Image (cartoon, rainbow, N blue to C red; front, side):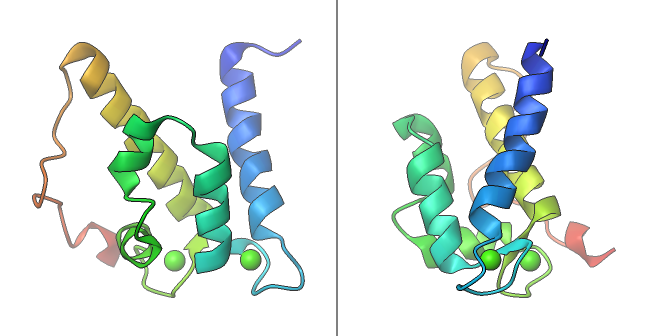
Length: 112
Ligand SMILES: [Ca+2]
Ligand SMILES: [Ca+2]
């Protein structure tokens, strides 16, 4: 029997694998632009959340998500994306933890 967090965790992993491991298009285990577009289009339905990652401009979304600048989104980067969205939602719901100001992104974190 799966608890709600069990479901969240298995869903994150399964969604990533399903979209990233597209053999005939690009690398396995990573989302290229096309795959990223697809996963965002199909697996995020709330317009509020869609707005947070700018799904209309996939190049821009990739820019934001691709922390190590290899042109694709790996699982680590994908998790960070999901986590950021969760934080946004939490902030909207509770008014707390809103550290993500527009144009106020912390850089240099990815350098480690
Ligand atoms: Ca891929
Ligand atoms: Ca990357």
